[in-house]
Image 1 (tube, rainbow, N blue to C red):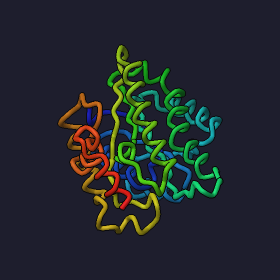
Image 2 (cartoon, helix red, strand yellow):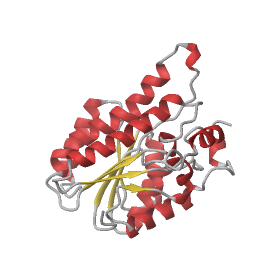
Image 3 (tube, rainbow, N blue to C red):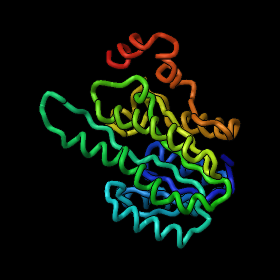
Length: 247
């Protein structure tokens, strides 16, 4: 992936990883469009970063995805990079028998990226230096029992990224998976953003951008902090890693 000169669409771009990536790519001379459900957060990033554009988009809504795709490809035909970042993480008690959280998580974290990728693929196939970036998680490889469906959707995103890469291998589109560790964001509430056990978001964004620049042909972008989960099974320490994550 080229690090500058792109037109980039980032879902879930109003906060957390999405905002961090948006600001980092914007600073490197890319045209950036962020989407999200929270218009106040979108307004905030636009005010703080003149030149970034924002569009309201609920990735749970197939009709909204089609409408935004039509608008973006018409108004910004230079679009060549999609970053599927939008996601939710909620605690679940599987013994309760309730599936509302599971269904919402699957809709946002898995169906959303699949639908948006499918909608934008015809356009991206026509663009030089095109790329699709997916955001999975270290929890795709060593899950946390507190949020079982979240972890399952991230494992699915990892699998989807691998197969998408194979199906697109004879096209101009590069598929890159970002695999974040536990980060200081508000994904599960304000306490997470201040958790000393989590990696500072700014450090994650800085290391990720450096890796994207150093390894433009990489299939996965792995900051050092996520090696603990990503390579647990390969290094024959999965049981210990699982116990630590769920300790």
